[in-house]
Length: 631
Ligand code: COA
Ligand code: AMP
Image 1 (cartoon, rainbow, N blue to C red):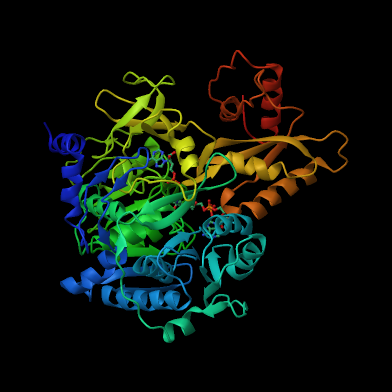
Image 2: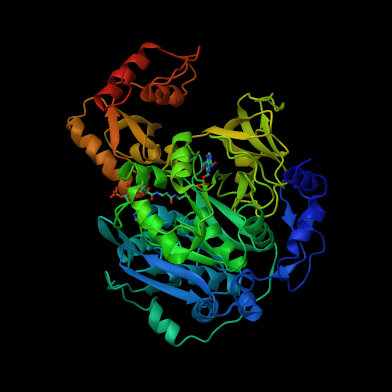
């Protein structure tokens, strides 16, 4: 039996022993009464009775252990032409002071704080400061519009919002002040205070009794110490797309999260304390939470916080420049970023200008790594390229090649095998295990290992309905795929209406809800269509009300603007077609999957229950007008 098999087997046969051992790497104020409380399924609790502090483990502990002068965060911002290195000692000081700012504003253990910030070190400081005082942060990605921010304010009821004057995109500066103001007006919840970090690229003129300037507040703050919280207390809420317009508030605990993330740094990524680790994502996504902020810091690494894009800031060589400048050993990003680089510099000429001798491994996630991208990265970087699969709900990999345990052969198109702790099974609709090679719903037998979501914020029933209802006793990932004879997982599609646009998870249902608000739209559908750069793009179908006298082009333009205004630029919704009717089954279900196949030119079989097969031909014609469904 290989080393990986041995470790995996132990995690299945003795999960308590396995995770108790991993938990020894974390500093606890008080040890657990029990490793796992399984008395109230599906609400499992890891390390009940234990007390800890995530900020202490990520920051203070390293200062006490002699890492005070080591870089904790390297901020590299090609978009502003600036950068800064923050040592662990400096991070401790800034975090303690910002924790003091929050405490001074009345934020206490269990209170929520929304963080709506760009990729600057203060974002990590704000997150860690919340953890320090036991407040629960909820980071909202900067590409979301005011309505989406408002939904999160209403649901999480924050005592404070931490924001900055602007975010910077290559094409424009996004003023956050007006977005936050509008979101607070839309939301029914009364936010106590707003802390605003002024950036020199665009200062915000927001003023008022509730608004506090970051720099002024920090100057007079009394540093706050780490407070013990329960291992089972929430560290954060991260909203992610669900099957309806209302996002799901994924809850992450303190104890289990630390244990799993710390374990993953050596066993999955094969990184040691003191090394430089770079996740080129955004703190607004789970990858940013786990692998820009928490895991590398828990492990005593240096984390790179990159404010830029893979191309255009200034060119397709910026990833290599960052790896070389900061001696990065391991990088993690989304395949779409590599497709963007490959498109601009197919022969990877820019790579030759940089010394990548410290670079050991590239990890990719967020979407399936297509074999083309995998081979291009392998051929040019000449290091192992590892696809790994995970979700907001788990906070770390479900499927990966755990190179710190044993590097298994790479099979293109597969994120390799189930990670220790995850009992992954492919289930048929009746709940039976699917035979090898046969597609089914990818599920994990409960309980999820540490860091898995204990529930959804204030929505226990939705947690059950979303993840457990179809296959009791299992967590349904929402992904469909198969497992081969070697136990390799192949993640092929979603079983719900989620699409993956440039590694971002979007709900087509949420876009449909916005389109349906247009006064001239009688009915609509949104599907994901294949895109060479972003993996998928959303595409809308609009059925107009009878007697509409507006120009069709205007209605399409309005609908595109509406989605941008209500969901945000991140939805990348740019195309809609007007059709007379939508293809449906006799029971009225819209055939979105079939429409996607027509758009992508892949084989499909119209379901026997289709109401009027001819509608599919009409859809093909409409799609050709916008460049899809080519014959
Ligand atoms: N704040 C505000 N707006 C943002 C934003 C942010 N943080 N991030 C993206 N946007 C905007 C973009 O400016 C763009 O707006 P536009 O319609 O005016 O051009 C829109 O949202 C879509 O952005 P994006 O999907 O990022 O597309 P892009 O064309 O700007 O860049 C890539 C394409 C591939 C370079 C880019 O998507 C990328 O770097 N992806 C990496 C993905 C990633 O890190 N995923 C996280 C999971 S690991
Ligand atoms: P998110 O919660 O935003 O991280 O998105 C999680 C979803 O992204 C998963 O459920 C998958 O659909 C998709 N995904 C993430 N990583 C991979 C991967 N390596 N291979 C295939 N799909 C992936």
